[in-house]
Image (cartoon, rainbow, N blue to C red):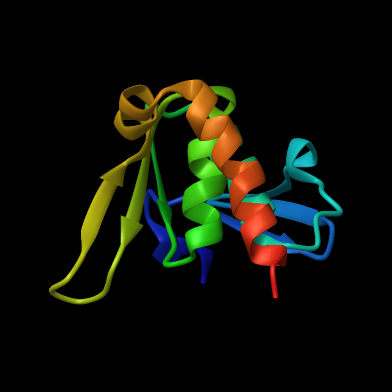
Length: 122
């Protein structure tokens, strides 16, 4: 089945471990080993890892938590960070890096605390 990947590299998380699968090989990616229970924070970890070798990173998520998390961690993740939202004919690409620059790094970092605080209010 790996041959059908062509030039695609698939990164798969199983429990705390992460594997990179290509048409030629399967290897464990030790730097992505994580005990994060939430997929949101794992997405940020994977984005940071991808930014180490790619100039543009696209995260696909509809989750507002992911949007806020990416804004807050944009400077730490590095690279040109994009968020793909929507379905079918209603797909939007949010340029997280540009938005973080416009809003300002301090505001983006503060958004994380405000977002968590608002989520805790019943």
